[in-house]
Length: 415
Image 1 (spheres, rainbow, N blue to C red):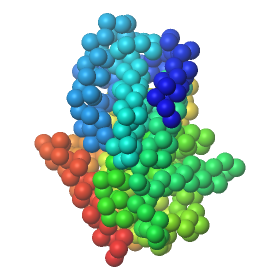
Image 2 (image 1 turned 135 degrees about the horizontal axis):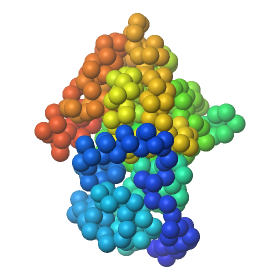
Image 3 (image 1 turned 180 degrees about the vertical axis):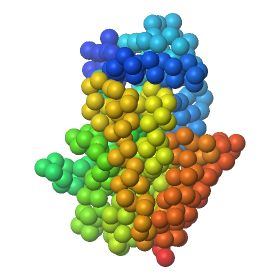
Image 4 (image 1 turned 120 degrees about the horizontal axis):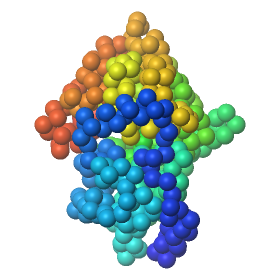
């Protein structure tokens, strides 16, 4: 796609939405719940509505200097905000608005790709796709700007796929009268490769996972098949229910029909809520999976504790409400409903072990995925392991945990 047509696409997509409703204002709450959220905001003292994942985004492909410039422009904006004390709530599609600034950076990377060739051009386009995805983060369902940003992210990813030396194939899996769209990534097509099904959380798109393939799996000649969680991205047609692994299960059962992968060597890798889905699938399909890694997954603790649930930052609650299709949110009701998502309450982590070895990882003091959750998972998995990554090494923690996880997956896949 040329630089001109990309610029035009951006202008066409966003032209009608100069006054689009700002992300933090999209979710309606009962007055009693509004009071709780306001109290949380005061106690947390956070300057941003969004959880700003600086280190993760840099690892995924955003230049750290570019990122700081984007965040500085958002923070310094003179335009009106929905919440004066949250920097990233500038209203309207204009300078300082989250979607505007990240889209602008994505366009910069896209223009740069126009002057590059081969893998350099591809990497610049993958970084552009990531920026467009971040522009839509956390991908609230009725966020018009996020929807437009996602279109740009998918287009940039498709363009990058044409330029990279690696093979990327869209896979369509029939499911409930529709099709699950997944992306299969291969280092080559000379012979069927072991495959890892990868899923991110409820606020990330499958296109965010490129670096996991390029820097880790491709080097081991392991294929990566990415799947969006239900109610998000390509999987937006299906609601999120307590059966969090339903789409991944359908994809897993389709693998014997895909000639480029070895369906006898299948691993799972889930981030955040994707980890919940992958652990669940490791109990449901024990004969088809060699190993599973869950990073920062909510398994039981926060899902079964209404007080912890209602203490979550607003962005997380907005995301959950969006995925569950709530129009007006009652925090107490939402907290009670989410108990059903606990894998212990569902009966998976109570009696019989899964034969699938599961490595459950999280950073120290992770309120969504405490060490007790990881220990519980390891306890009910043959060969399972629980790992806690020290938070004082958070700058290295992300890469360390991925390095550890991929080596472990490789060992199990080729066992």
